[in-house]
Length: 137
Image 1 (cartoon, rainbow, N blue to C red):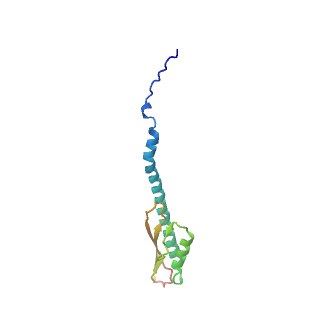
Image 2: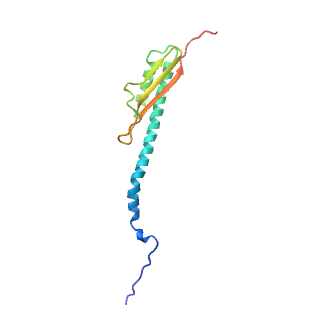
């Protein structure tokens, strides 16, 4: 005669198979947070790239007797070599305003989009003093 073995139920046995369901519910939220974090990082890299390009343009344009357009050219060269973190920067392109004493360069564009359908505009401006000869007071 074979004795029937009775299994005692352990705590939690009534929720067997619950882990895949929990994973299916939470995975989209986790993926959304991961992609959002990557998108935020891409925006910050695009802002940094635009600011570095604007500063590079100011440094080229503020030199004593710099040729006209030197700042825009230097900023565009920087952006061409920087990669695709900042897109659509070439329409209308970097803009440098020069006065007798000041130089201001502005770079605009959009950050690289990691999440489809999401686009962030980026605009960074750098300012510097133009080098010039002055007479003592």
